[in-house]
Amino acid sequence: MITVRISFKKMNEASYISLLDMQRVMQRVLKRSALPVWHTLGFNPHIYMTFACPLSLGQESQCECVDVKTEAENPDFAQWQTALNAIMPAGIEVYRVEPVKMKADAIAYACYRIRYPADAAEKLAQYNALDSLPVEKKSKRGVKMVEMKEYVPTLELETEGESVSFAVCLPASQDLNLNPSLLTAALEAKFGVPAANASILRTEFLTADKQKFE
Image 1: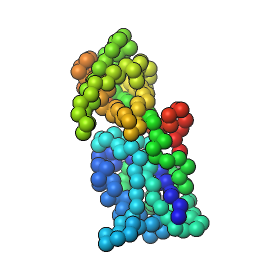
Image 2: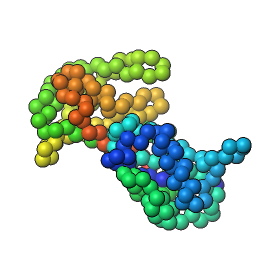
Image 3: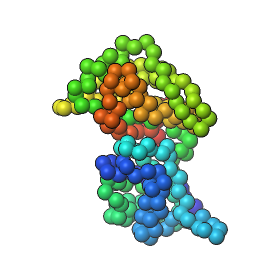
Image 4: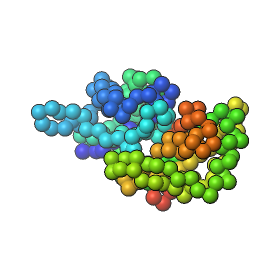
């Protein structure tokens, strides 16, 4: 049995598809495609699927992936990609299908491009003068304080027409997973830059040694 990684982009209106709905979308698309994917056993068989690092609602991504299994001996992955893209909802595009190279738990960081209207540049630049920016991270385990400057020392601002953007790479492991919305919320609280004006795009995953996750 082969474990297959389906890599896809989740853009525009598709960014508002929740993880639960995304699971339903993939179940339906895989069934409609008639691809030879493996189903779990038991009274309620369903397609085995594993998503890496679920994306928050409203955030876009160029690097989503879901793992499935197949018992096919020589899968035609180019045909898989074509078959899936033919019936995917708007905003979701499969860009690679291949056997799994790295397990999902190899992901240690997620990188993002965060974009604001250009008039926010002056306020955002004030971040670089801060010595500290503690934020509250809430989870099922409770509330803990995280020092944001430890993970984002500076904002390297890039102006592009009517917008300004910067890139960040945040921990995304099982031990610590920081959502970029923690940063945008902190920027709003500290400098009055509305978090609602931020457009968040996930660009890639990295391993612990900062190699690209594949």
